[in-house]
Image (cartoon, rainbow over all chains, first blue to last red):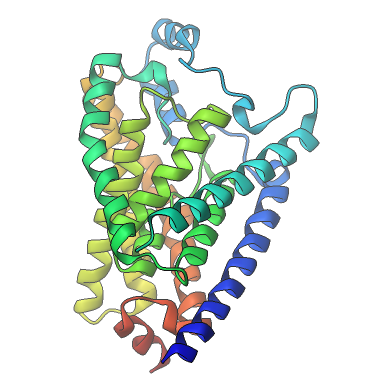
Length: 105
Length: 216
């Protein structure tokens, strides 16, 4: 039984490594492959909200100043976008792994 | 579908946070009961993969794009919608604070839509379809698609209550775009990912009957 658990633990680490590789490939490709078109919510807003109100909302902006808004680093173009998304992927990886270890049974 | 701060007045945004908090709490409780050393790597791999794939917007025509949400995929793998809530909460926290993708005041609404509604609708639709003996692929595809569509309609209702969108045009626009995003971005990718996992690591799916269905 304990050897089964150890074996599944090892193959789950393989799953983690494969997951990291896939995530990093996606992160590196995303700035080049992702569609620049507005997403469904933004498109809907563009279609059903008056221009005045859209401008008001634009002006209101966000309540928090994020370090890498829109998945980019100012003045770094595509390489900044790659760096930002890779950094985000590793951050989510670290937080979820760490939190998982802390709250596990 | 990440709602920015300016789309919902603060008084209403707080209400969505209050509704979302018990779900977040329950998802942490789920992890406390179900996570062990061997499952943490799976959770982390899925969270990282979902963050990355959410950066990959797929064009759907009409000058619009969309991306996968992923709560249904995570819920199917762990056989619990709470897993989807937990992963989406972590992803949305990083997206909101680090990348200004989705607001901070509206993060409660975003967690509610993408983590709770899409994951619960997606997972229970998937389960019902599996019980009615549909294939793993079709169940995953339809579940993920419906989860995304319903969460987009919920978002349109929130936009109406916020005074941001008119009700019917908002529902029609959000429904139309996410009907399509759900097919490609959510349904197809979820079905492909579940099929790949069920054939390479059938032991991984918590619900063993799923793996049996694939092997047969």
